[in-house]
Image 1 (spheres, rainbow, N blue to C red):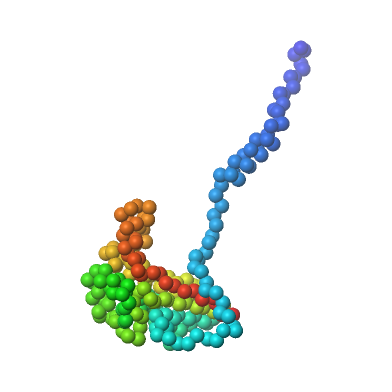
Image 2 (tube, rainbow, N blue to C red; image 1 turned 30 degrees about the vertical axis):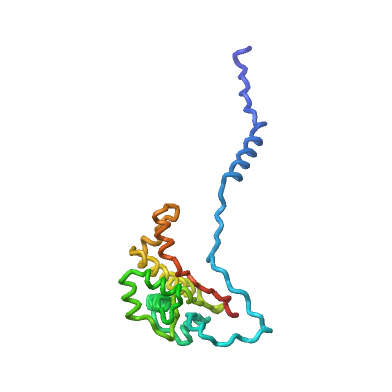
Length: 211
């Protein structure tokens, strides 16, 4: 070959690049987990039937702790305007759940299972006949308006759940932080979790917002 003539550069075959890219695409589609934001995992009660008459007021009404939030972010708690803080609301929900005003047989079993410090609290602020019968019967009802701010909505839910978390943690003698960190896959911690919640359901009713 003459010295003055340059050799042509070898070409890189790109015929299989499309196949490789396709295989990589399939690999990532199969192995990638797409996050699914579930939001607040609470079931809304069904809409009332407009053809049915309103229910009569019964003794069971005292087992419902009613919290209403309007579009101006004002709270109505137990049919009264509420001026307290979220910490006050959490304390009041806790007192309502642990009232034992007229306990059932299950309620008496729950009371007897409480540690002495919790029994002392119940004897100090509970056992009011105009409040809930016992933790097995009571329900915390929360209803908001369409214009209620997201911040107030979440703060009220946090206060309600915080009251239950304090009850569960105190019942088994641990802090709220330790209660929230319990690993239910561990047998010992799962047993503690079950004992804390035994016959004290987290009975929270979230009503559909008003228009």
